[in-house]
Length: 116
Image (tube, one colour):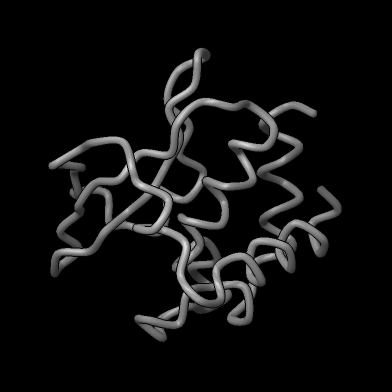
C-alpha cells in the first residue's frame, strides 16, 4: 500500500479514542493531534525503519515521533503543529519512550478503523 492511501485511511479513522490523552486537545479540526506514536508504529509496519523521537515547541515543548526509512523520513502527523515549528533533539526512539499502558490498544484500534 502506498503512503498516500495509508494517510487517506488514517485521516478518516483519527478520533479522541485513538489519540494520546495527555493533552486533551484532539479535535476534528486537528485530527492528527496526539497520534504521532501510533501512526509511527503503523508506518513502521509498512515501511520498516526506525521510529524517531524529537521535541517541538508549539507553543510549549512537546515530544513528537515520526519515521526514518530507507525511502527517507515519513511524518504523517507533522500537520498537527503550527507552521513555524521545528524539530530538535532528534534521535532514534526507545520502545519504552513511545509505548505506554494504552498505546498498543490505540495502535490496534486506529489500524483496525483505518482498515490497515
